Length: 83
Image (cartoon, rainbow, N blue to C red; front, side):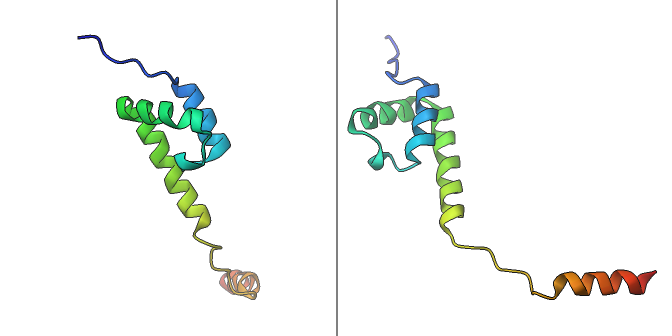
C-alpha cells in the first residue's frame, strides 16, 4: 500500500497560518481542503495549528490587569528603606 502524500508542504501550511490565522474556515477555499488533508497526516501540522490557536485565544482574551499607578513609587520607597 502506498501512503498518501499531502498536496501541501508544511512550509506552505506555516505561511498560511501566519497569513490567515488558525481558523481554517477563513482561509481561501482552495487551500482549506489541502490543509485538512495535511492535518490528517502530519502531527507537526497539528501541533503548529494548536499552538496558533492557543496564541490566538490568549491574544483575544483581553488586556492584562494594570499594575497600580503608585507601584513604582512603592517599590522605590521599599528599596530606600532597606538600605
